[in-house]
Length: 539
Image (cartoon, rainbow, N blue to C red; front, side, top):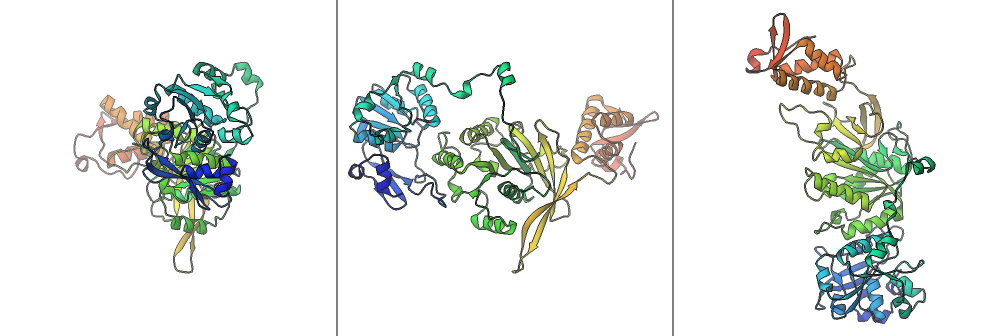
C-alpha cells in the first residue's frame, strides 16, 4: 500500500492531508504531531507495509523520547464542542468534515488525566473504534470524563474513517445514537463480567486446552525456567520453540502441540541468534523475533502500555501466536523483581496485552550464600509472587564437571503431579572452521542423587532445614528424633544420614550423648575442634 491509497481507504482527500502537513514515502506515512501552539513536536510514522509478508516492523514508529500527546489540540482548543477519537486519522477525517476533533497519539487507553483539565467547560463527545479495544478505551475515558457523551457507531463501521467511507454524511454522523455514562455502561458491560451458576457449569461444555509440551508448557499461562548464568536457558528455550513450531516431540520424549512462536530476546544480538538457529537447524517460518528488541518496553513512563507493546498485540493476533518466550524476565519488569507489586504489574500487563496464550520467561536464581541451605524452589530470584503466578516452573542446573549435561527439576506443577528430575545432554557439533556449535539436546533419563536410590537434593535440604529448626526450638534432639523427622518428610534412611553428616561437617550442629543416646544440638564450639568427619552414616 502507498500513501495515496492509504488516504483513499480512510476517505481523506490528498490535498487536505498535504495542507495538514502529512507527507509520505514508499514505506511510511508521516503525521506531524504539534503542541497547543501548532509547533512541531515530532513526526509519527505509520508503516504502510505493515501486514505485508516479510515486514516485521511495528505498525507505528515514534522517535525515541517521544510521549503520548493530545493530537490536533492546537486546532480544536477554541471550539466549544469537541469530538474525542481513537486515532489521528479519525481526528483528521472529522476535521476535514468541519467537526473539531482530537485524539491521543498513543491510541485507546492512553488518555492522560491532566488532559481532562484542558477540556473542562467543553461539550465533549467520545467516539472510539467499534471493537473491544475501543470499548475498553471508552470505559476508561468515562472514568476521567464522566460528563462526556458517547457516540455509537453502527455495526459494520469499525471506526470513523470507515463510517464515512461507506458513504455516510456529516449530518448522519451527528445524528448517530448517543449515551450518557450510566446508559453506556449498562449497555456495554464486558462479557468477562458475566456470571456462571452451578447449573451453567453442569450444562456448558468447556474446551479442554492441550499442553503445548506435555507436562512442561501448558497452552495458557506462565511457565518459568530459572537457573544460574551460563546454564543454557536460552538454548533450551530455543529447542522448546523449535519443537512447538514443528509439532515434533520435545527431546523425542514429550508430546507437543504445533503452534506459532514469538521469541522476545532482549539479551542476545542478532548475530548470536542467527548462529544458534543455524546450529539447531531452525528455519521455520512460524518462529518470529523482533527486529529491534532494544526498543521494546511493556509500559511507557506513565505506567501505561507502550505504543510498541500495543502494536505487538495486534501482530500477535495477526500471526496467531500460541507461545511467547521472554528472554529474560528482568528485561521486561518495570521496577524491582523483588517487589510483589512490580512483578504483579508485569503479569497483569502480559495477560491483558497478549491474552490466552502460553508464556515462558527465563529467569536467574540467587547466587549461593556460604552456610545457607536452600531448596530448589527457594533459589528462585525475586518476589515470591513470581512462583504464585506460574502454572509450571523448572530449575535448570549444570551437572558438576560436565560441559554438556544439565538437569531440569520441576519445582511447581499446578493441578498435576510434578515430573521427576531428569537429565538433558547438549549435542555438540564440530564445525569446519574449528569451532563448535550446539545442534540439539537429548533426554538422558530421570536422575537420583546417589546410586542407592536416595532422593534428590531438595529433599536432602528439606531434612537439613527441619532438623536445624527442631534443634533450635528444643535445644537438642535424639538420633531417633532425627530419623522420625526425616521419615515424616518422606526421606529414606540414606538421605537422613547424609543430612546429619552434612550438618555435622559444616559445623551447624554438634554431636553429643545423653546417657546412651546420641543427641544433636546447636554447635557452641568451632566445628574443627569438636566434629569428627563421619566415614559412615549415623543411623
